[in-house]
Length: 200
Image (cartoon, rainbow, N blue to C red; front, side):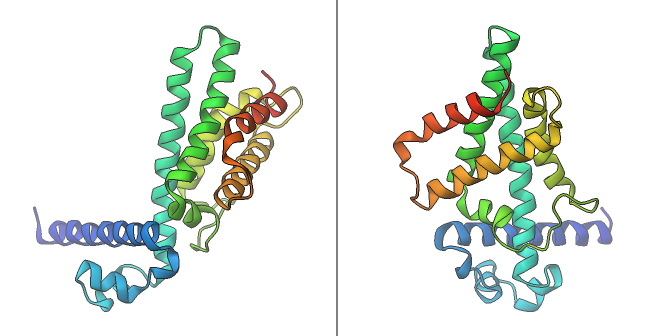
C-alpha cells in the first residue's frame, strides 16, 4: 500500500468515526448535544482535524442522513423481499410487500429517531427531488417506488403515488413519535393506509 493510499484509508476511517460518534451522541442526547467541540473530545482529535473533514455540524448531519438513507433502503428491500417469499399468490404478494414496507419504514423511524431527524427534519444541506440529489437518497426513494409503483392504480403516476404514500408514512412516524397518536392503533393505521391507498 502506498503512502497516499494509507492516508486516504486513515482519512476515511476518521470520517466514519466522526459520523458514528455524532450519530451515537444524537441518539443518546439529541442533536442539540452534537457540537464540534464535543465530537472532537469524544473522538480525541482536535477541532481543526474535525473541520478538515466536515465544515460544520450541517455537513455532519448530511453525512448521517446519507448513511441512514442507505440503511433504510436496505431495511425496506429486506422486508419486502421476505414478504414476497412468504406470499401465496401475486395479489397476496403485492399486499404483503406494501404492508411489510410500511411496517419497516415506521420501525426504522422509531428505532433511529436521530437518524430519521437528520434525514427529514434537519438541514443537512442535501438536495431532495432534484437532479443533484445524492445517490443514497435516490436509492431510498427507489426502494419505496419498487413496491409502491405497482399498486398506484390505473392512470396514477407511480412516482407521485409513492410520494403521497411516503408522506403518509412520514406523518404517521412523526405524529406517533410526538405522542400525538395512540400507539395501540399503530397496526390498524398501517392496514388502513394499505387498504385505502394501494390498488391491490
